[in-house]
Each structure stands twice: as structure tokens, then as C-alpha cells.
Length: 271
Image (tube, rainbow, N blue to C red; front, top):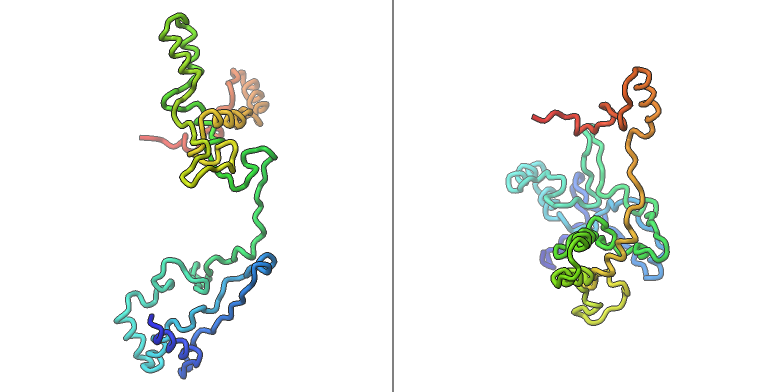
């Protein structure tokens, strides 16, 4: 919109319309705050219902004021989806009320607003843990499923057992033993040297994939290996299961059996 057209629309919105059925949206007063005030200012408890662009739609209001009842058929003929709730916009505006139930109940965008909710409960990790820094969201230092899963050197424990059965005096075996002890030769890490220069914000080098290396990552993965065993679903009913079979003179099965212990997906017939 050009500056003269916008100015004309703003003046028309402020002056108001002579029609009794059309009223321009109110002008919103926005309060500016300083950096110091932003630390203590309370966020909005509800979405803004007043338009921040009072000049918008002034041409349509002008035509409606002049044309009266003839405006709607004229608008519907020349406009694509004139009654669209979102006004052909991808996201609803804060003051847009969208009907969500058949009885006419409406909801507004992001309502209740985030400012009216309780503060976020950000969990904290122990000191020295890799998640001590809440902004460290790397997954590979804790993804134990990928431990020792290097395409160039799969299952080093198994390879070590294989070499143990071979003649250690064979030079080929000695060469394979040395390569196994050296570990993967790929991804040695850039030692903190990035395109922007030397970076030492993370001594472990695990904060960025470019600086991560196999040795430090395997050592970190070792700290996060699972140390618990899964518990079957039938453990809480094991006494009842044993008593039920003994009363009927039946052999006690290993674990619980029956439809209640089988997931629904396992009970669906497949053809």
C-alpha cells in the first residue's frame, strides 16, 4: 500500500464512518519498555483483541457506507472466498475468533496465552553431567544404541575374540591387532578448529559434531549405559498365576500368558 493510500485509510479510520452499521476498529496504544523494565514486566494474560492496523479494510468500509445493501453482492462477486474466517491468511490473527463447536463456541489464537501459564519447569542435571548445560541438546554422546557402531570397525569385542583364536605370530594377525587397538581412523575431530577460528568453549569436543571424536564419545557413552533390567508386565500378578495353575494341577508356565498380557497389536488377525 502506498503512503498516501495508507494515510487516507488511517485518517478515515480515526474519523469514523457515518454509517451506523460499520465501525472502524479501535486504535491500539502500545507501551514501550526499557531493557531494565523488560525483566519485571508482566506478559499479556489474554490475546490482543484490538487491531494494530486500524487503516486496514478502510476501502471496504468506505464502499459499504456508500453502497449500503448492494455492497455484499458486489463484494461476493469480485472477491475469492469473502467470508473466509482467516481472511485467506495461513495463521489466524490474535483477535480472530474461530468457531470450534456446533453450538457456536469460539477460540482465539494461542488462548490461553503463554503469558498466563505457569513458568516452565526446566529439569536440571547433576554437576558434571553432560546435560548440566540446558542448552546442550546433542544426542550422540548419550545414544548408547550407536556405541561401537562404526562402519569401518563393527563390534570390536567380537573382532578381539576372533583374533584370540588365531596365531599371534602371524604378521597379518599382528597387523589386525594393531588396527583394532588404534580404533577407527575416521572422524578424529577438528580439535576445536572451525572456519571462524579456534574455539575452546567445550573442552570435551562433544558439543559439536565437527569437533567430536571417537575416543571421547565412546568414553561418554560408557557413562550412560543402561544399568537396569526391564520388568515384565506379569510380575505384579506372579503369585496369582502360580496359584491358578496349582489349583488345577497344571504345570506353571514361565511368565504370564493370556490375552491380558498380549498387546492389542498382537491380537489383531493378519490375513
